[in-house]
Amino acid sequence: MTDFIRTHRQLYDLETILLIGITSVISGAESWNEIEDYANAKIDFLRTFLDLPQGIPSQDTFNRVFSSIDSDEFESCFMHWVSDLAQLSPREVIAIDGKTIRGAKASGKKSPVHMVSAWANENNLVLGQLKVKEKSNEITAIPKLLKVLSIKDTIVTIDAMGCQKNIAKAITAKGADYILAVKENQEQLYQDIEDEFRFGKQIGEHLSEEVDHGRIETRRCKAITDFQFITPETATKWSGIKQVVKIESTREFKNSDKPTENAVRYYISSLEADPEDFQKAIRSHWGN
Image (cartoon, rainbow, N blue to C red; front, side):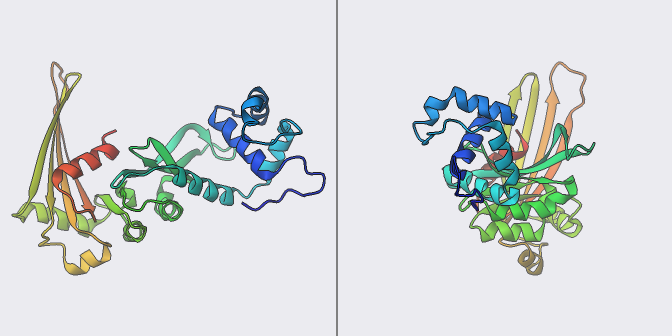
C-alpha cells in the first residue's frame, strides 16, 4: 500500500497501525476506542512481533490513518493477502454469492448494504468481498472480485445472476472451472438445455437421499457432455463449456401436512466430472 505517513515526527509506521487495526477488528473491535482498548489489553502479545517503543497509538491516530487510506487500494491488498493465506485444495469449491446485510445502511441512508463475497468451502474462509449498491450490480462486481482472487484449479459456483459470458471467461482465464446456475434470464441457453435433457440419450445420473428431522430429500443429478442442441457457435460464446447439468429435487415431510416440494435446476460447467461430483459441488453452494 502507498505509505502516506510523513517521516518527520513519525511515531508509528503504516504497517504497525494497519496490523493492530486488523487484529483488533478480527477480535471484535467495532470502534476506534475499542481498537485502542484491545491493543492496550494485548500489548504484551503485540510486542512479540511489533516494535512499540511509544506504546499503543491513540484512537485518534487509528481514526486519522484509516480515514486517509485509499479504500480501493486497501481492499485489493487485503484480498490478495487473504488469498495468499488460504491453502486452497485442488477442485475446492469457491462459492460467489450476494447477500444483503440486515440492519446495515449505506452512508446513513435507508438503503441496505449489499455485498458480493467469495467463500472457500473447505477453508471456511471469505477470500474477498465487494460492496455493491443493489443486487443488479452483482454482474459488474463479480468480474472485479475475480480479478484479485487466486483461484487456480478451483471450482467457482455462482447463481443465475452471475451466469454471464464475460464471467465464465474471467473464471477460465484464471485457471479455474465454473458451475453456473441457468434460469430464464438466459432464455436461449435455458431452452437449449431443456431440449438436451428432453431428447438426449447419453445422460449420466447420480441419486442421493437424505433423511433429516422428519424430512426426506431426494436429489437426482443428470449430466450431458455430448451436446445436440447447444450449437458449436453457442458453446464458443460460453468459455470452456463441457457439460450441462440438471438437478431434480423432491422434498417430502413425514408426519406433516406440508405438501411435497419439487424443483428442477439447470447448470452449465467447464468441469470434466461425473454426476456425483457435480452433486457434491452444487450441494456445497446451494444446499448450505
